[in-house]
Image (cartoon, rainbow, N blue to C red):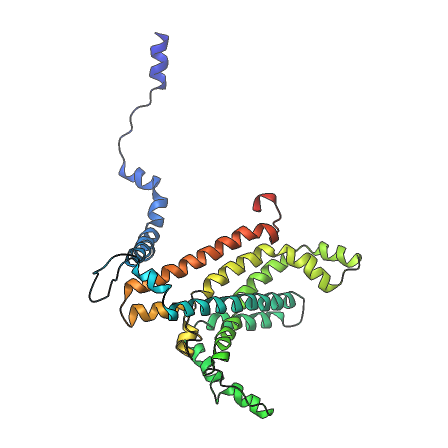
Length: 312
């Protein structure tokens, strides 16, 4: 009898379905539903579709007539595409270190309490807002053309400027300079990291007789290595996706010296309508960036210092 009473006390009456309570319990899902729909339509589906099309000869107007690895075989056997990959690597490994160095240097200077520092911070950040636009690329082309402002200024001091945009030895560096000039976003992140470095570390180092340079390399750099790592990975990914600068300024020339892989993807997709080849090149670029990112994450344990053990 006691057992029956205990079981009756424990038994929970079955609740009726309530649409209102169901909506209230899943309100979080309804809030993220627009994002989920957008992600599936504009991110997930194109991601999977491009992988599928990369194994086909899909043409925008003729459709698909062949399946296989022919696109990838063509990529690694065509001289133009191989050269574009080499130029892309060269572009990335020139711009990323220079951009990070400039950003860190300017952020270090702007971290000091100097008069009008907010004005200089804004001034250095503006190129990052405008630098990705087509108008700035057109302006950059006007600056470096044969009779542009750069060569005119050099002529005033008796120097005959080179043909920046028509000489293969200079064209890539002009494109790289445009990218390096846009160091404002990385600078702001570095500036935030520098402000979080404890001031007592600098005071202790000064008491021990350490100069500014020694403090910078022994205190500042180790303390902000997580931010350096973050900026390095993000800038590396952006460098491999660069398009506006080389397309607007040089169209990939002269002699394909600025012909990045992103330009070949665009030409294959929207000029020759070879969507299969364009998808294959995009996936090759994706795999390259992924491998470089993995190498960066593996290497961070040797040079990135976190404040806690779990962050390693």
